[in-house]
Image (spheres, rainbow, N blue to C red):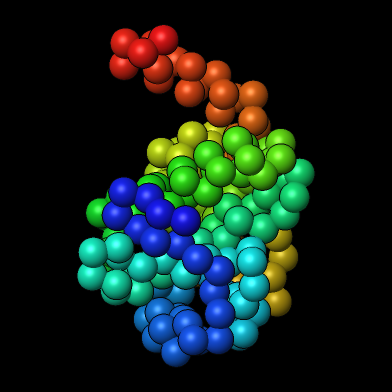
Length: 169
């Protein structure tokens, strides 16, 4: 799958070293608990590379069937460049247009403002804030977790509004 600047493909064993390097950055992992990189193999996780340079940007998760979880983790060098939004929007569009997805959800810590902005730019809206008891909580856990979501109908409405605003509707 290609976007304007990214190539996304299912993560395979050749990506494990790049994943380990990504997950070794404490700032990248600030709001998440680490999991073995082997957990990211398969069709639900997509390695993202810059199309022009081939550099490994990070990964995207689009996991589920009817209700799909959107996730992403990018190298710091690619933060603030719009890659997370670009990849997220592409997966959402594919899920709603050809994947039979009814609803996309995403969660993060309340204090993770960057990730929340990405969710909003992808069209998801805040649904709830909730608290989870973790055995070894990360700093900021006391503020809770947030869930964002977008339904196919909401996405379709937004697409129609965008086309009208662009003069194409």
